[in-house]
Image (cartoon, rainbow, N blue to C red; front, side):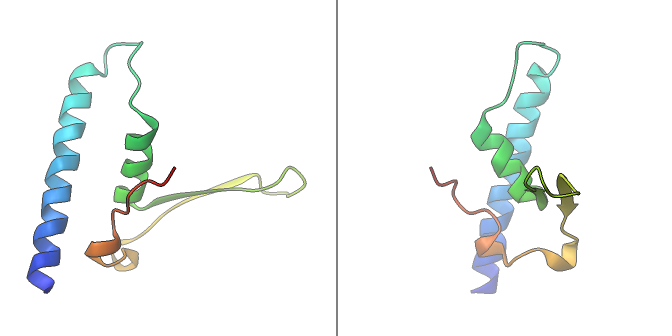
Length: 83
């Protein structure tokens, strides 16, 4: 079972890197912007978490990144984006 999860994670990683390579070709175009879905997917993939607080809160936002030890199990690493 663990080997299956590793292969699944490796496939998702390859797709992510492929998508980044495609974006790299378009990055010099000032009109280009990647989709919201991909930006969200990238944050999940890289373990980036943004917390935005209410106006009354002293700290307005906090951005954190998971360490490798904090990464969830491979099967839960890249959940589908819900609408």
